[in-house]
Image (cartoon, rainbow, N blue to C red; front, side, top):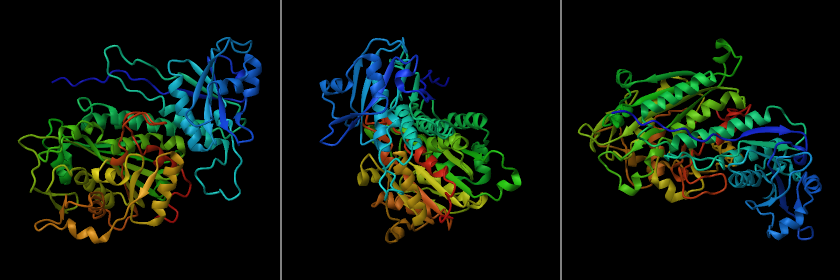
Length: 531
């Protein structure tokens, strides 16, 4: 059978910087001006560059904002048609964009709102990231406050990129295109690494969302391995892929058991990053972080079959794996200072005469055995192999796994915050702070020892599905395989799907996690106090 071929997809906007004000940027068909919700005495406040735009176009922008009943709230966008100006013969409209209090979260969401309104445009010039609010004296560690214009540039680029996301498989192709170019104007002289870093982080979010959205008639374990190989070639990473024969020879019983029913056999993907310019001897002295992402390219539930409605979104059950691949691709661009290995155990949880059965016992990498009482608790089986391999062979200083693992975490947390488990307070705090800064928030849940006995099996070392407290017991199952290594588990099943467009999120698979990992991994002291 010939494999389906993914059609060409839309690409994210390009970004440039200009020290000119937005009114002076030639070639922009839209100029976007920030609108803030000022104090009661002030009313609406127009942001940087607005006066020059008003002078150039002859439009009273404050009056236009009031006509459109703007309050400066985040997400408001009013398009005001204007005539071309002597400095810009291509100008067609001014976009008035509400930025609220101009916090990073506001600017990110304003970028997304703008991106949705300017699709199919050629170029937008905007001063939205140039709105730097007053910084309270006691806000040094407050991620909700912008301390530098660089932070607002990063937030805006993330929002404008992800708000532009689209996926289509129609005969006529995509019905709309993201704006081709966004010029960030009037921010002055900033760190030259800011824009490339911001673009890399934003595009990691785009890549992880795209990988999670690709249908499973294209996306199987082999296809996911091919994406990893392309990433490795493009970004100078080392890549190793285990096929089913090597998996069997090396003892990866969990991955093999979950994937054996599928017509497309399982894979284990490994990517390795070393900071640029670091020699082999020096690299061995660097801290080593291991990321593990669940790569179930489709989850039918196996013989413990999911209901049809629950199965409909299961093309995204490899979101954790997509997050790891997207993160690995961006490490060089964000200047990650440590060694990082990404592992993606990839399998399709299918149904056939050779399917994993309830009651089967499997042997994981390293020898631990699991009694399978529910074949729909398959993600922990493949993750266990990868975690055990990392501990035994890679000598990690820190490990983080990412997985759409349990429906229970969605019951606990809803759909706007991911679940976080960690065996150390410092690592948990660092990841929560990174999530807050990235706009991918986490909430820490307990590795409650009182539930550990529920994992006991009468015939094996572990029971893979002990029942109640489903997210906690899943995390406790994984903890068995990490030993004493500092470790965190991100259960992102709560945020794996988005019901409708909401700020930078688009309806469908979310790709949640790559941005928060990159915010953490770019830190110069990311393992300080953790490992």
